[in-house]
Length: 254
Image (cartoon, rainbow, N blue to C red; front, side, top):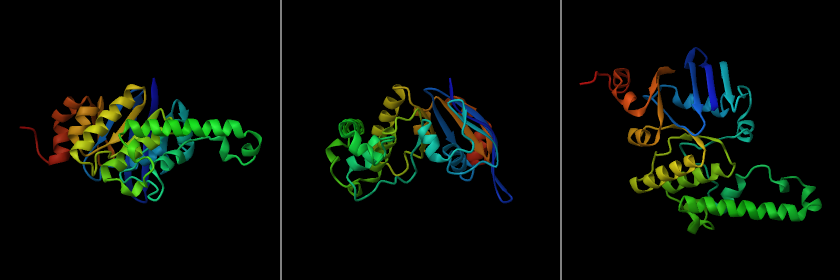
């Protein structure tokens, strides 16, 4: 089953074409890597998928539905979450409160429901807190649940970002450079948790410059260069492709 699809997606900024006729699909349960040299258009492609930037032309489908013109919050409601290269927690709020803010469609968000259905709202809040604590436990941050997010290291913030996006129960998660700024020990934790979440059926698409992480995690890799698709395939195939070596190193394979 295809859960995410780009069809001839193009993005122009004035006279510059940042993404040029990109077409690909992502299967349910897949971990797809998106790589390429600096300036290849990866981040713009991610922004287009997430709804942060509108496409100049082409089509994006999520779960078979056309979301090309849908804003980011509609895509989140449709099952696609996103993390950012630089995590954005609320620094003075506790980890548990950061997590609870990410929960979607709570009855208590509607004013009158607080008066008409207080028991239901209390039950939802308990369930949300249990879910948040479970996810913090998954990423080895539960012991810090009541501490402010500002105490976290860069790697811990990446783990919190991963846990927080899972509060929305996404079917597809876009990971923007999850390894950036993460020390080797926490990176192993992050890789293990992505694998574990993927094993539960969540699909991942990730931009990453850490090629070792990409080859260990991803089932398939897409390579972009100059805004367009250069090649795609299994990690070992892509690593041997002369076009990839040329794009990254400006040379040819030995």
